[in-house]
Length: 577
Image 1 (tube, rainbow, N blue to C red):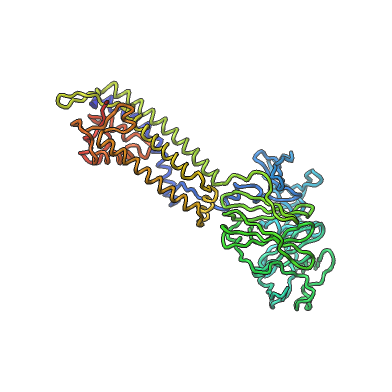
Image 2: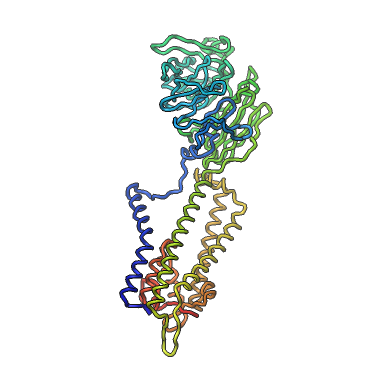
């Protein structure tokens, strides 16, 4: 029976306070954070910007000289070979400068807040280079006459920025045909006023220009530039002065400099997803065997993205290959090798998995090497690790509370109970805890085994992509069926516990530990009382996070009974068999 001695009461309350304090502190902090943020403080949500930052370095790091470059956590400059996906250190320490890597064509800089260095002949030499603001994509940074320049949309023009006197300055505009009228190119009337994207690719001292106009992609070699106010006039066409598209003859379908790449307008779907500070569109310029090529991605959503590859023979464009990108592809990036013979496509999914492809005259093929681990896997690993730490802390606190309470109950109380002529011994707290843990372990292991069997053929990556992008996929339907099956299984297991205690006062765990659940009349518990006991169990243990309510109730009641919202269920108790 429960002791009425002050030492026993104070000891139980002190143990409860010590073992519950960490839970209360964490709960208070989470509640405060939720109140300030007006949302749940813990959310499992993947956003595209964070995926790019944490995902494969091939998806966003600068590219030059056939390598992707990044700075490792040890402050060494690292390079990734796209053809093999092998990483190697350049043995260059960049500690202490907070440097960013900047590439233009084949030139590479390390730019810090107060200093900059350019890689020349394998060594870094001092430079005055600065980071462009805003940042532009790979194929909008190129070399013109060997010097770094940027091209970006500015109003109705494409502005050319050059680096002068330690700063980026708009000095020229890209000169396009008359934007006030439609111009016929390859039998297609186009209005250059609707140009939205310009891509420039270096090939030695030549510049290849790809222009997106109203969903169509155009190509020409060389640039026509006009000076803006306050700068000297400059006109550049490489390698030789071509027949200008500004010539009236070309506007009427003569020997045009501009050529139309795609014969069918392809919807712009790629811009629904963006890299941080750069756009990931669905039209890209390439070089194959020293000749211009283009990639145009078709598809209504990331579930069905198909890349169409075109190449130019000097007169017309022909499609020579297609590539279906993985489900969930959210951004695509292309880079060109230094010898201009091959190009590479980097497709990144919404969960951070990167697929790389090498493109040459023979077609498209995936590069060897392992794919990067999905961000969702990293997030789940962190979640499981945190859950394991929480479980360990809860177990330590619960064990300390159980040992302390058991000692106080052994010292201050007697476990005897009498009903009529019968005399029995009440169950100890260790036995009751062990019985419950056995029941929970059996339910947990059986549920895990069933879940493994049901999901052994499930495409987990596609499921993660579909959930992250909110897209339909067979994996989602399979996962939904699995979840409902597991819910039915858990309800069945709980029903068996209730029925076993109601009819015989036993569960498998109680049978193993020699414990039965009976009324004070020593009769079986009954269905209603057993059901209430199981429901209140999750209140006793606060969802398995804190065992204090149930332990304190057992310690302070005469018949070692747990909590109950109604008096008649207090008649249900446990005894040693």
